[in-house]
Image 1 (cartoon, one colour):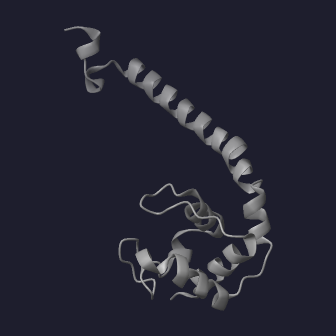
Image 2 (cartoon, one colour; image 1 turned 90 degrees about the vertical axis):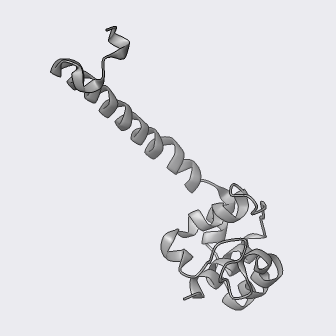
Image 3 (spheres, helix red, strand yellow; image 1 turned 135 degrees about the vertical axis):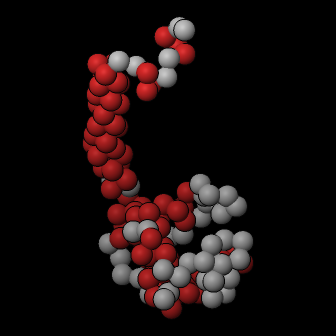
Length: 130
């Protein structure tokens, strides 16, 4: 049997410890990169910072929702093609909600970047959903 075919369970304890240590180190490095590089970049996004500094109107956000979002999420945000949005603010924080709306990373949702005040209004509307 060649070393490539030896299962992890059949490896000597020293090799297993070595593998676990390497994987632990890799996970730690990934976490450090996330904290040092990715999170500050998200916080430094000027659009998100500007939006979060504003107070939104749920009424205006509701109008924006009906015009741009209800076709997929339903008039009552109950979900159709897009998911049900009731309680979405308990599943995602405001930064995540903004990124979800503007990114278009989850097709068929399009990329959509309203003015910061309109985005703040949309957040206020989403926070008002039961």
